[in-house]
Image 1 (cartoon, helix red, strand yellow):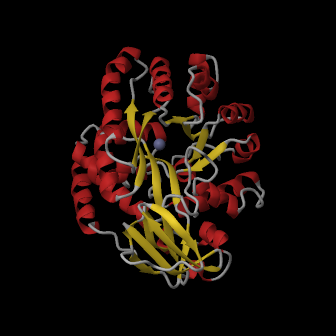
Image 2 (cartoon, rainbow, N blue to C red):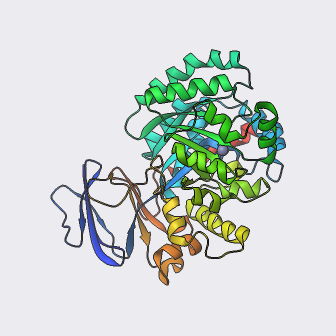
Image 3 (cartoon, helix red, strand yellow):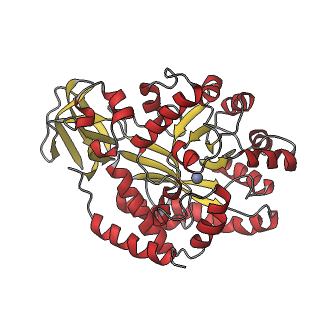
Length: 416
Ligand SMILES: [Zn+2]
């Protein structure tokens, strides 16, 4: 399978790109199509690296708008968890298909997912053609015996996810330190290390979580996880809103990635901004995520990156904090080896976007600043993953069927 993109621009210069077998084979002004190439005439379109969503719950597109405007614990306990109890595996498949479509339409080509029914998530990811870390989720309600019972099934799921293909990376996703016992977290850390798998967990999202952790374990959330052997280069910590500088230094020392989710933090009013200056100052690997749709309420990483940058400027009172180029690099996964954004260079995966240079938001100004402050995902014309065109001219195949399925299923799940 080969693909040739001609007549595009990269960093203000004329450019073309050829992909073979899912990898960028040629890139530069003199690239010519070859016999058998699928052709994209990209006049008026700008070549761009894609975005990486570092933390989400993709199938929660089923719950968009459900339980809006409520505090986090009430939202989880009275709205989300009861509705999730009605979930059937097929619901997760379609919810993830809708999420994948939304991501493809807004320029995300890889996401870190934490959701139930991982085999259905993986099936949707493979059918959509996008990349994802798909997880075996664990909640044992702080009961180690319950956690131990779940282990065989968790391992079996990892094996099944490993068989799906190159687009899916299996991983662990224990929900949080207040829903998963230390024994289970230690087992996950050891198993993930043995198998070299990524692990993601929610951490220090609220002040209450931190004070409960101090009361129960006598230490902060980051130190508690570190004692369990949980912090390492394959660990992603979502949120970390209520973490201080010295704990960020520990996280940086261990090489773990912190994924900030500004829209979800603001929508659920977690009480302060992610302390980006402290995290960046400590040298923490950083990523950006949308979190699930029900706490966002979309998966548009270009909207998220604007909120990220503006919130930091607002919270610090300093407009020079988190300049556009740095915010965009974080949104592209380029500031975390774990998130591993894909650069545009020969030999790299053929994952890229073509952006509409003539859209008002991109028509004047520098591209990085326009992408962060002006544009939304609607400027993405074409999305390519592993050399396969997933959207062209903003059209994603199967869109009507996916929307109809999710509408019907969402109505059933959220009915009283
Ligand atoms: Zn989350």
